[in-house]
Image 1 (tube, helix red, strand yellow):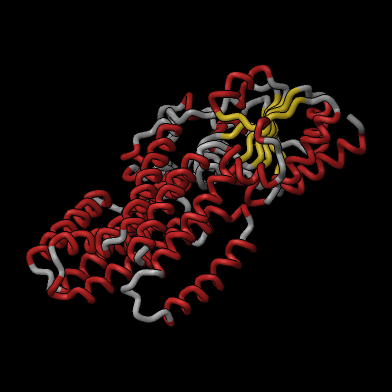
Image 2 (spheres, helix red, strand yellow):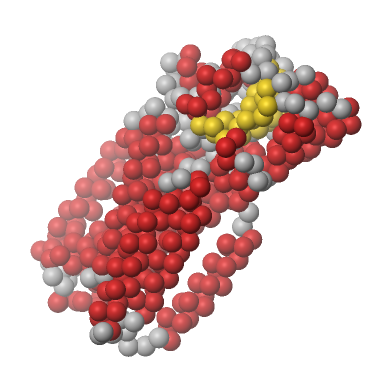
Length: 462
């Protein structure tokens, strides 16, 4: 077998493994197997690439492997699961940077010998690569709190973005006619970098799961364009899978919020009027309770539903949730978990955290499965969630989240809400649930509060 045939065999095996991994990742029971298949497929793709006869020297490749391993290993080992959205945003940024650099290098290498197909592919590559790089960095900044979580807007913002996109397409057309126009090429690179910033800053924090999916799609499109530019089949297949699955997931997440996908991208979701903090003179004050008050309610409960949100991730309270649930279950209380599609900062964020705490997957229910059960539930324990339990989504047409499917948490006999303070959530939207007569807010760090609940229940019996 020739080296070229062996490379293509490795690429074929890698592509089949990538497809099989997506199928495996579609179910919790097979997700781990799907991840292993994807990892093995990537290993085969790397080995096949290293066998390419076009490689004349391995020195810089080895340097890249060492540097990449030195960066990636600590990221995988030491970044906590609570920071997984930020890590994924950084990974997208690195991917965008990689394909962008490949595009620039390929443009310089081919020079005047570049053909029409190649210049179109390279133009798309550097445009999407630059967009993914800066867009992912903006998403990381919002998730990390370096940048404001609320939308950053200015007049004619969407018109400006569309004009820049149209200009980039026109410049790629210019390059087709005149590939040696280096200034035009670098203008495309610059527009891609600028669009990444301008497309993400007007997107509010509550839409971050959709943004993460969309950035994943951009990275896939950039990788596919790279495959066309350098004639690499596995990059074309892998990029198409990544781009397509990311786009489909973005659309699914938008549907879960009952909102237009276009509105997510261009709507500056989360831009709301300043209504003042909860409990101000403009409305009733929330019922703030003590740990002892909440424990008495839970002690009498026979059914309890936990609704986790990003606040649980911030306080790393997933293990404390499990310990409290174990104590309640030992006393005869049925405990279940309600998982909203957009809870957290990425798809499946809450599922990952609860799985880390060894909470059985069969106790996790999505919105459609459990929403009708809230009215027959004694207690709903809301751990750092805000928008997914906000009744304004059903009752207030002026609310930015109006129409978004939310949990019917206000229908439970008692809703115990764990929050750090009375400030609005990440999206900056006041929650009407907090002033309901059956709601009790317990302020403080969620992990410490849950541990105090558990200690009180153990001490007083159940």
